[in-house]
Length: 462
Ligand SMILES: [Zn+2]
Image (cartoon, rainbow, N blue to C red; front, side):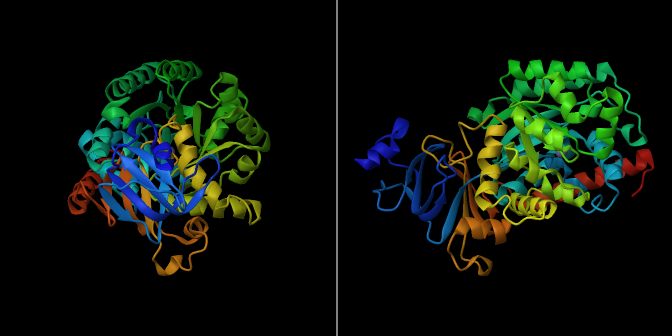
């Protein structure tokens, strides 16, 4: 029977716990199939069946009517700083270097673990409500952040930041490297890995996260690479984030950031480089050829007045993934900006169409973070990380090709249901686990405390 073959594997013959029936299903599988009508069944934490038109579907314990709904793999927000939701309304309009070095970095370094938990919980709730089932978070307090993710119910890939510079001094141009500081931050990263790598039946995973090429020495970067290999994980870091970073690397090493990483042996499939704004054409070719993952962050780049050479990287065949970075967890906005910014820079209207952006936002991120076998597509045996979008909205009619329509015109608020590891964590746009009011109040208090400390200690009022 077709049904038995489809269900296959561990769950053959079992009654599925859940079926999302009669929906549009964008599988993001190797053939990029979109099923209409399609049905997805879930047994335990995994996808147990994917059925197209005319295929017999087993009866499930619970059925979600997929009529006029679009089912997608959960988004993988490959590069995020959920704690920095606390910056909203404060730093968006400052000069980008001031924002980075005088607001973002000091705010980070002064946040208490309790404050980090409260703000990460808000950021994670926002991300999840807008369809991200996996967050690749990079910060200095990933232990506290992991607990926030655990409470909200999102999948977490945690990267405890590693740096040799004093983040309270870089705003004044002091990039002095302190080897002891580097080793201490590396030690904390190892503690986070020991506690979180594989936790929650694989719900959590860790990466190594040197902050940026201009605040880690080549020696430290090599130590980090060895540790990443030891733990069979990847390195996720900022690359060519600012003009001054590119200038510093050139002054110190006589080469571009991309070439510096390539010569160190870091540029390859085990690197996720975020931003990549100031890559030259030569760097783009080198980057693409290396197989390194490009984490495209179009929203935050645009706020800073920047645009990454995404169209060139895509044309060169680079591995592409997508992230929201800081102050937002909205991957739908990120997906739309990804296309628009690339088209503006290339002055061309065919670049990064919806299917390609959907792949970047799901399978791309999953592969980048080393989770390509587990998440990123709707296929039997993968983790049941799913998003259901309500297409019955004025801005989404008429329905011809819902993937195209949604990625050009949809809104994050159209996400109706979110499932992680088979559990419904967002239903009708609301968390099934936490109260928004409580999360928001704690985050407000943490943000006020963080900004109060920043002003009080540095006098750098903004
Ligand atoms: Zn970042």
